[in-house]
Image (tube, rainbow, N blue to C red; front, side, top):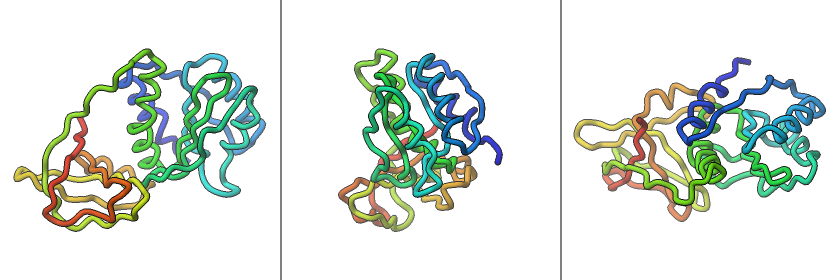
Length: 202
């Protein structure tokens, strides 16, 4: 399986003001992952695990993190789509973010959660206000209440936001997007023609 995340997550770490330090790719083995995690915690201010955080028996991250000294798992699973399997924890005060394996899920979660964590550890006390673009939805956008939905959109010259759908494993959805729209947790979706704020890329 190709590594689709190290370079892209590393670029977002730099965007947040950090310096990414890559470790070896680890096989699906609890012992090997624990060894790498111990080294990473000892030499890093924040540890980002790319892939491995999933559901059921496929999850290798939760057990390896729990086995670290002085560790505590804050949550394993977020009410967000894409990105539900995300793990947030710490070991001896070093924050650990376990990202989902699907590339789009991982990049969405790291942009929303990972970047603020890196900035906070780096000494930022105030998160900069995000620039947004006002637009109108091209079509209805269904969503389940109680879950934050992050939807990629393409913007037209006339201020129309066209949602882009596809599997969370497809990076092509991100590359085709100009930005994203957030459907709030308390909403049952958004209607065609509704005014939205688009968080642009670049």
